Length: 300
Image 1 (cartoon, rainbow, N blue to C red):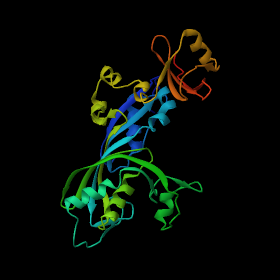
Image 2 (cartoon, helix red, strand yellow):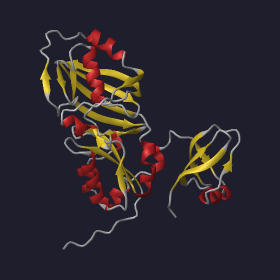
Image 3 (cartoon, rainbow, N blue to C red):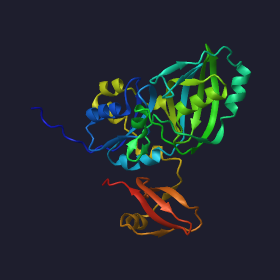
Image 4 (cartoon, helix red, strand yellow):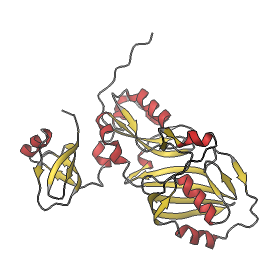
C-alpha cells in the first residue's frame, strides 16, 4: 500500500498552458498530483480540442474562482468553411455541404464586422448546460433537441488573421458565456457556406496572457523552489475591481462581519487590503455606502 500523500496548505493561482487532447479536469488532476494542495479547481473550462490559458486555483484562491470567470476571454480560432458539424467542432459528425463558390476576402471582412458588439447567442446542444438536472449533451447524444434560451454576450473585438484554403483564422475577445463553436457556426451560416471550428486557443483572460503560463511538463520538471515561484497571488487576477485600504480598526471590524460606511464611493465589489497592502478578500459596497464582506481569505 502506498503511503497517503500529505495535502499542503498552498494558496494562489497556477497558469497552465493546456495541451491539445487534455480535458480541463485532466489538467487539474495533474496539478493536484504535482502540488498536493488541500483544495483546487480550474476556472473556465477548455474543451479537449482547445489549447491555451487555464488558470487553476489552489487553496484559499478557490473562494475567488467565480470572480476570475467574470473577465473577458481572448481566443484564436480557426473555422473551416464549406462543412457543418453537429457539435460545431471537429469532434462531431462532419457534413460536406458541397459549396461551389466561397466568399472573397472583402465579403469575409464585412461579414465579421456584423458579429462585433452586444448580441444574442443560442447555446449549443453539445454543452454542459443543464436541463432538468442533466447536461444538454446527454440529450444531444440521444438525438433529442431541447429548446434553449438565447443569452446576451458581448464580442468586444473580432479580427481576421488569415484566410486561405477556405479556412478563417480569427482572434476574438468576448464576454463570459460565449461559445466560440456557436460563433464559428453562425459565421459560416452568415457566409452561406456553413462552417465549423477546427482549432481553438485561449490566449488571455482579462489582463492575464498565455505567455505567462507554463505547460504541464514544464511545471512537473521544475524543482520545488521553481514551482513555488509559479504560484501567483489571487488578487493579481482581480485587478479589474477597485480597491479599498482599511485601517487596523476597520480591518478587525470587517473580519468580525461588521458593516462599515464609506461615503462618496460608487457601489460595487471591491478588493480589500490592510495597511500593509496585504489582500484580505472582497467586499460589496451598496448604494448607501455600506461595505459588507463578500469573501475573505482564511490566512493567518
